[in-house]
Image 1: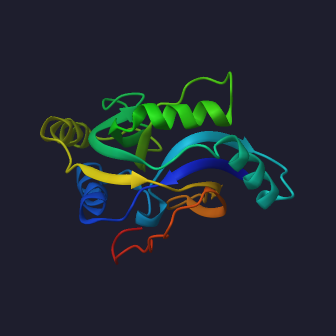
Image 2 (image 1 turned 180 degrees about the horizontal axis):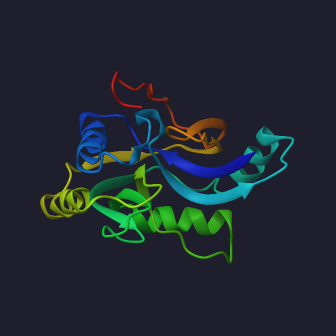
Length: 189
């Protein structure tokens, strides 16, 4: 099983519009499911974990003193670049330091994370038209999204040869006061 620790990104008009914009700009990309939007704090990778709830409790003890904090997402980018994207993302402009700190608590001594929310993945080359559209999105920007990060979870990632990855929360590390309903409207997968 492939595991990672992440904070969920709420489904809003803004976050759903990001997915539609990226799907229009780069139709050859695989856009993530709306309910799968998240900010990765630490990638744990493939593991033979037999007790995910125990691992979640153990990781939760590392971040127990972290409290809710504001996050603002805006701006589009890509790894390694918009000219040759493999992952298309929206960046973190507020809450970055807190997210990096949580990542350090979860894996001391590991490389610092680059906080971002992946919107789509690209398996091969994109067309020059898609590249131009992505650069135009970078120029005009995406609608910003502000929310309070109050929940962090341990997730399992399942990938398929086609379509977006699917994520399942195995346990909360920082439980929120009230879990938001995370559903995806028709047309966003």
